[in-house]
Image (cartoon, rainbow, N blue to C red; front, side, top):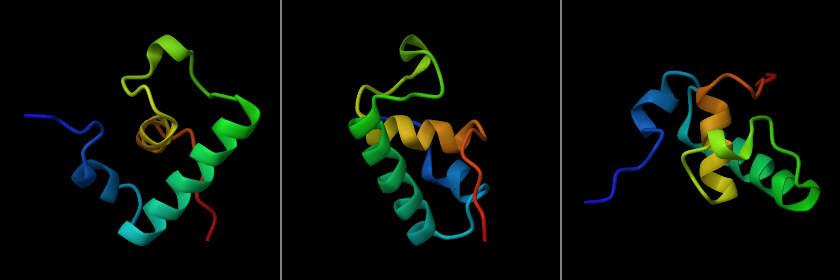
Amino acid sequence: MNVIYPSIDKLLNIVDSKYKLVHIAARRSKQMLENKHFQMKQSEYVNKKELGRALEEVEKGLITIKE
């Protein structure tokens, strides 16, 4: 069984909407692909793909959400 990290339940405690979470993660992962800029050391990420890494950054509070 595959375990998704970070869990959606944990992320929804940080971001109040699934749709907003998808938007944030998509934008951040695109930035990672284009600029190769990561907010943590590559070895600190659990996920190998940018989308998962973007979600990890949300979980760690490295992405600020402006309303």
